[in-house]
Length: 342
Image 1 (cartoon, helix red, strand yellow):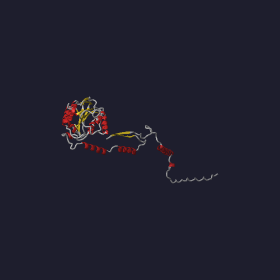
Image 2 (spheres, one colour):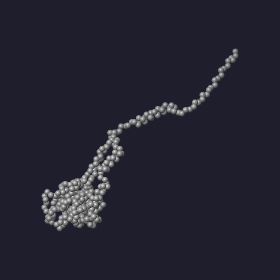
Image 3 (cartoon, rainbow, N blue to C red):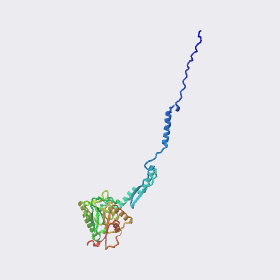
Image 4 (cartoon, one colour):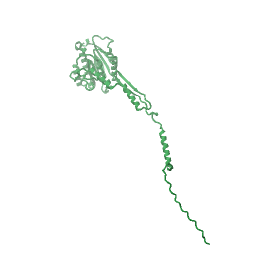
C-alpha cells in the first residue's frame, strides 16, 4: 500500500532585524555602580554639615589675652592695658587694637623734637672738642635712670665720705655746683669742694666706678660725653690722675640749673650721689623732685646733699635740697661758708 502521504514543507527561519541603538543612561549602569554613586553623595552631604568637637581650649578659636604696655613719659609712667577680646578675633580687630594703642602713645617725631629742644636749651653755644672744659658737655645723657641696676655683685663695696657724709657702694656720682656764686669768699667754696671731691675719689679702688659732673647753666661731665653721653669710669690710678687734672681746671661762672645735672647723674645708675650746691634757687617743681626720687629708686641710689650757705644753719631749713636727700634715705648737711677755712 503505497504511502503517498507527502511530508510537510519546513518553515523558513526569519531573521529579526536589529533595533536602532539609543544613548546609554543610568538605567544601563550596573547596580553596584549606582549604589556607589548614591553612598558617595550621601557621605559628602553629611561631611559638609558635620562639625567636630573642638578640643583643648573649650571651643574658643582664640582665647583673649591681656597685654600690659608700660611707657615712660616726661611726667612719669603711663600704663596701657588691652585685655578685651571676643572668641573670634579677626584681622580687623587686631588692627583696631594696634591703632588704638599707637594713638595713645606719644608720636615718635614729637618725642624726638622734644628731646632735641631740650638738648639745644642745655648745651652751651660753641660747644666743641675737649680742651675747654666748658665745651665738654657737647651733648647730654639724660636717660631714664637705672641703666645699671644691681651692678656687678662680685665687686666689694667701699665706703667714702664727702664733708663727713659717708656713702657705700661700687658706683659713685659727684654732682657739684660751679656757678658764679661759688667764687664768693675769695673762691673758698669751690676750692674746698674740690679738695673734698679729690679726697673721696682717691679712696676708690680700681674695680669701683665713678663720674664727676660740675654744673652751672649746663652739666659738665668728666671726659665729655662721646657718642652716647657720659659713662662711669673705673677707679684705676691713671683715670683718677686724669680726674684730678679735670677737677683742678674747672672754674666757676654762670647761672644754676640743678635738675639737668641730677638727671644726667641718675641716668648712669649709681649707688651713691653726692650733690653739693650753694644755691637753693631755682627750686625744682614738685613733679621734678618726685621724678628725681623715682629715677633714684630704680637703681637703688642714695642721694646725699651738702648745702653751702652764709651764716649759721636755720635749723628746720634745707628746703628741697634736704628733701632730695631724705626722699632717697640719704643725709643732708648744711655748711657755713665762713667756717670752711677753719
